[in-house]
Image (cartoon, rainbow, N blue to C red; front, side):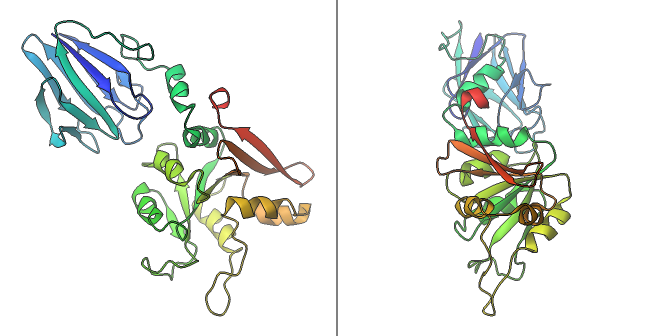
Length: 301
């Protein structure tokens, strides 16, 4: 018997992986898994599949977010054709046959390995994924300023990320965010929900991304120093977390002003008018702010 597993969604949609009798396979997001998947909600080694002449089974490997068969959580379960396994944000469909299914041209190799070329091809039509990779190419600590006032549902995203975060105005009530609701959020490549941060903010003007060698509290103290309110507690300073306003402001700064604005920041990454282009803002050797466009495409990922 052969277990043919087809990935139904996400970066790897359409890929097929085969599990043959006597050759179990593990699935996860880290290199120690037999099949490595681009899904930040997967554990390093998330689940295993087993197959023999009697049938096929899936076993959860004490994953953080659990393994589900037909939407029910399982520790160890027998599989049948048509079953759907969900792990992280990835959905797999099971087919049990006595022969291998013909794989589409874009499918993973028969070893179950998904290559870097496969991942890049999957990102070609997803600028937010390319933007995330661009952030990863920078050296330093990563942060995002997320504007929850423009999209209040983003507060749920901020709360589930699991890293350090703080509102620019801690006195505001969660149900009354008003105009003073940007949050500074610490990010790492392993941040739970990092892909969601880009997917839910990119192309909508809801966030900018920062790189700095300094700590979260040092970056927060610098940013909050540039935020002011009037006597009615209304925001009266520049909304620099808005990508469009940021671009206009940085274009006018003198070298001295740019030094004060950037402070501990190495660079700022933000969407442009075209979400398929990221702009990287940094200070040149003479202190002038440079704006470097980065095309978010397969070639530049």
